[in-house]
Structures are given as C-alpha cells and as structure tokens.
Image (cartoon, rainbow, N blue to C red; front, side, top):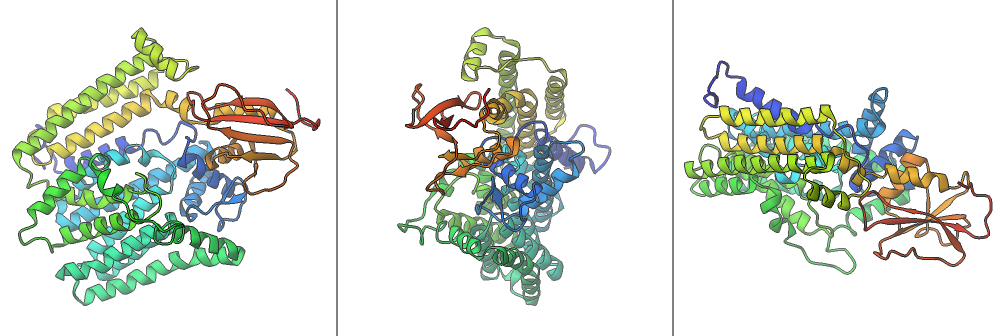
Length: 552
C-alpha cells in the first residue's frame, strides 16, 4: 500500500490516512443536535433516569421499568454525560459514548483483520466497515447497538487471537460476549456462542489444547457479565427479572411467541444494499476460497459468525436493519480478505463507481443546501419548505466552511491516489466520509428541527398543570422519554392504569384528519407535532370539571 500516493515519504502514511478517515467519518454529528425521534429518544430517557437517581440495575424510562435492553450502554452514556457536563448538554455528552463504542468497534475490527489475513488487511477491514451503507447513520446515534458492535468485534478478535495466545484471546472473547449480553440481551449472545462452538468443528486450527485453555478463559471472563446484573435485578425486583427473561425468550423468539411463528429471510434479502460494498467483496473471498481454503481461519471465523447471527436473528419476532448491524462486522473481515485477489476490471469498476457516485452526491447536497438556506433555486426551495414548513434558512460560515473542507480533502485524495489493489476500498470509504461530512455540516439544522422534540415540548409546556398528574394514551416511549427529559413530566400510561383522576390527558393521534378528535368530558387545550411531521399529532385534553390547572 506504500505505492498508493504520488508522494510517499513514509510507510506510516496509509495507517495515518485510515485513522484520519475513520475520525472524519465518526466525529461530525456526535454533538450539536437534540435527541432525535426513535431509539435515540428512548435511550436518552433511560440515561436521564440514571442521572436523576433511578436504580442503575433497573432500566427506567419516564418513571417506569423498561426491559428492552440491559443497562450497559445507559450506564456508560450517563457517565460520559456527567464527565462532560461542564461543557456539553447531557444528550451531547451521552452521544459521545456511542462514538467511544464505535471507536472500539473499528479498533477490534482492524486488529481482527490483521490476525486473520495479515498486517495490510487490518486497516482495510476498518475502511470496509465505515464504508458500509447500513452503518452510515446509526454509528452517530446514542443507541445500545453501538455497544453491541463493540462486543461483536472484540469477541471476534479474541477468537482469532486464541490461535496464537490462548489466554489473552479467551479473555477478550469472554469480555466481548459479556458486552454483547449487557448491551442487547440473549439472542445475539446465543448467536455468538454458537459461532464459537462451530470453530473447532469446521477448522482444524482450533482443534488443540490451546482451544480448551481459551474456552476456560472465555467462560471465566464472561461469567461476571452474565450473572451480576441479573442477580442485582432479582434482588431489587424478582418479578422484573421474570418479565425480562420472558421478553428475551418467549416474546422474542418465534418458537415461543403467541401464536408460534416461522423464521424469515429478511436478513438475507436486505443485505445487498445494507452491507454494500462489503457483501459482494465477501462473496468473492468465499468463492476464491472454495478450492481448498474453506477451513482457514480467515474464512471459518467470519463465516461462522455471519451464518450464526443471520440464522438466530431470522428466528426472532421483530426484523429490522438495526438488529442486522452485527452482520456487517464478519462481512467486513471477509471483504478485506478479497483486496489482493479482486480482478483488475472489477476493482476499476468499483473505484470509478465510487468516484462518480459521490461526486454526484456532493453536487446534489450543495444544490439542496442552497435551496434550503439561500432560497436558490426558487422552485426547489419552495418544495423543500413545503415539506418542512417553518424552517428558516440562514448562512452559517463555520458549517459551510467545514463542508468545503470535506469536499476539498476528498477531491485531493481522489487526485493523488494511484492505481493499487486498495484503491477501490479507500475511494468508497472516503466517499462515505464525504457524504456524512456534508450531511452533518449542511443539513444538521433542518434535520434537528424535523427529528427532535424540543420545539414541540416548549410549545406544550405552558399548557401543562403545575402539580397535578397527567395521563397518556397511545403515546410512544420516545415521546414520554422526551417529556421527562425536557419538562420533568412523567405521565401515567392509560394502558397500565384502569382508573385515574388526572385532570390532563395527552393523546398521540395517528389519523390524517384535519379535525381534532373530541372526547366526552374533556376540552382540548393544545395540539402540536414535531416540525415537518404530518403523521404524529399530540393533543392535550383537560377535564371540564377541573379548575386548578395553570392557564396561559
């Protein structure tokens, strides 16, 4: 890779380029915007509960136990929020925890690539990962899946390392398994465990005494992660542990769901776009290895992980791209293994596809920014402002300057790169970095207004009671979490409360009717939605007979 550039004075330039690309891809967007709709809003609610003094062993969202995931990410993110509280808002500090876990993911992905294929392949594995389409947005959010990815990468690196260093590799594998368990739960931990058990079955590399030593270390280092939190939860609330186990087994796997279901091919269908360009490169690696190399460590380990994760996740009740994020890591390893075997025509095609694609992406981004913030071209500006009414465009020199810097750096890299086996992967990773840099600099403000709850909460606040309780009906967990985070309001869910005397009712209305629904015995005092959202509408009702509410 040292002949990659026209000027190549030092051998460390390729490694430095990899570090710069990874940081340029990861850092923008980690701070500077509010919690966004969806998983990030829910996660911030869990973090806020910890910061407010809720028991750390009981994941709590807006005053109620929330059993969607163990508390590892929330605890680490709360620590980051406290650490950076003098300088950053709690949600920005917490989001840095996601960046920390993604850095760990890239670190262990790269080291596993070196262990499986050689020193040149470590940085390529990291570049394939940052170039994966499915990770483009999720890597910059405050969600537990970032911790899951770190655990998957660590466990995989540990398994690869056991061939040379059984005790260290086993310790890393066990720690990775523990992180997987404490970030998401049982299904992914089970899948990784099955992949590890398959290694000695399909490869003679793991059929020796070192494997037994590594297995003992894996169990030793995984046991605290697997036992301490469930025991702590049992001591505080035995019923919650039972409910959590039900949510992880009976409710999540199709075998025990009601009624029992069948598996899905979802994770085999969505990968062509989600795992681009890792998937076609990984398939090429496996195809090349079909003649006598299918039992090598570089094939068996990532294939066992990918197949095990795909099969186990296919038998869960909910399929989504977020759950498929762990599949990207073994595919990145396999893709890195294809670098020096890719046909010249295919390599050139991927390179020019990357260059042309991201040149068009960059040009389109500038046109859309001009329409949103400068009003030129006028027709496009009218269309975009009709989609997001109320947005006021403005010229921000620092953000525009950052976008210009990303474009110049990408152009310089494309010009200076010479033909080499690594060039297509670097070009694609650089293009994804450019695309994210432009998104984070030019469009963070309109996205923040569209995806955050801050403006809506400020609009609702004057209409809330000073002290009385509030009931909610059909309100999503993310919205309830943001009510608690911004306003300190914890609603009593009508779904869990048969009778209530609360004078105020908050309803989430999904209908597209322009008429607000009326309720007998209640009067509408406020209605609103997130800017740009036409599918979610929130309505605040007041009991007609109640008179102690605060008025505007």
